[in-house]
Image (cartoon, rainbow, N blue to C red; front, side, top):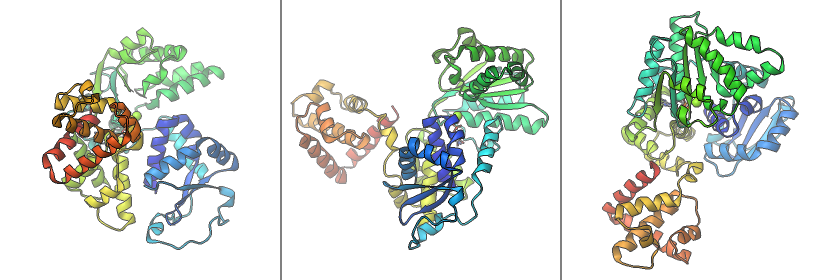
Length: 461
Ligand code: ADP
Ligand code: MG
């Protein structure tokens, strides 16, 4: 349950931002998961927090926790610290599954947890993120080597080091890894990890409380400055100015600066020109989505850290079902491991099939019908007009069926919407196509592998 909650916090952070998470969600604790009744009991410090979370974030709790627990419908109940001893549920039949998830140890007071989280948010290096646990592949070896080199020789090689890439691909991990190496070599080094979001917040407070001088001297004393998600200072001119100033002071003193972002400096809108050229002045390294082979290596390594040795087959089954990023890959693995221990069984292909039914629901929205049809057209060498036409040659019909089938499988669109997209008036046409393909798949191995290939191409397009 701990892992699921951590995973939930990560997802929520993406949706609502770090500050909301630190203020509201980190004060919450999972008291109990009642698997029999599908009720999750959350513990909040007081009524105020409870009310706020209920009014603003109830659907997020239900949606994401339900998904992580692999239950379509769960009930979220809040309990306050003051009513911990009041049983709010009737006694339930204890099933083996609820026994595993029921928190047996006494609850940690939420205030303590909140304080700890605050601490981390204020620039601590996370000891969990080290180079040794980072799997290197063709997608990230430039960023990895650069980060590694910088950690060995801070302030000398690439300054600044700028790493960019999509969400959940390991930027923050590398940032902390640098911090950990420098810290272990020089206990006295002033190292600061800060998200740009937090930097902005801090700067605004410094202005508000007339503490800009203290703010600047804090930053100017740093030996290693690690700024995460620098894109958050875009469109904030005053903050950029302050950062520019700090940057120059540190740079001139040969202090290492490392920044991450979701895109290249030139693609960050609302960034002052001089800021951009400073960020580009060292080394700019990208991180891409890993290829299947690297994904498998990552899964095996993460599983091993939790004491599970996975075969390639098992790792592949998980890797091939997760399409977006490594954070979600980890989430999927956690769900698989949790369900295996819940059911007290080994991690098998059957279990994975059950736990990871389909790619992440949110991601499905990212795949649009156009992309699918384009891929199918390209493979069969038909035009979109052919696909939409009334022509019924055997080859063309088959290609059309494949497109309709993949559209249903990879998107959340209704049969009607899918039919309309290819100018089919009646949604039963789509149903027909689905049935035909399902039937053919049972015996036709060539079709089967073609569908796998197309699916893979679409998902990774
Ligand atoms: P980002 O900051 O790019 O959004 P993170 O650094 O937070 O991504 O990575 C998300 C999760 O994926 C973390 O738990 C991290 O440890 C893991 N991760 C990312 N890339 C790798 C990798 N190459 N090897 C091992 N774990 C990775
Ligand atoms: Mg990050």
